[in-house]
Image: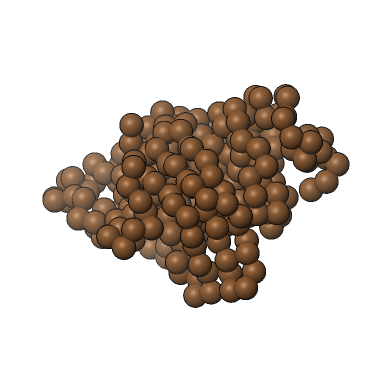
Length: 252
């Protein structure tokens, strides 16, 4: 099934500082996996390994193996642009381009030549906005600036922009941390709908959010994965004392 990920002994250094220590995990395709843990524990660092965003940091060095559908993403043969088409990313703060709503969504299809005609592009933009639960709210103002939308709408526009590239995997780095509770609920509902078609990995500081949206959860602490399992098991009967201490609020 498309979108399966297997990481083995992933280590990340930023210069002399080691940020990740031998992280290994299997991430189920077409499901939601949450990464939880205190600030600075390595969860976002590992997330950025999956689409090689750490390559953009001069001091970063990544070792180990990450397979996407059985293909080594750190192979010299892997085209990073193609990888980032297959593994899209939604960031903490909504970051629409200073372009129209339409051009925000059409950006990746133009870059990757996914639409042959204007009508193909129109259909692709509509499909992506519909998938992001935004079409009905913006269909009459597609040529207005994306930056003019509300915060929650901007984040759904960024999700639509990611989906328009037709990825297999969608990485979300605290996608609701800048949103109000109503917008957060909309994005969480959307994540549940998208998981039937995409592999979704979400970094979140909110343990309640991890419980609401994910099927599988990994707990990171000091650059290591302390425990990973089904979300229900991890929160109701954690195997590790550190996991239990974190989810009961003894540290973090």
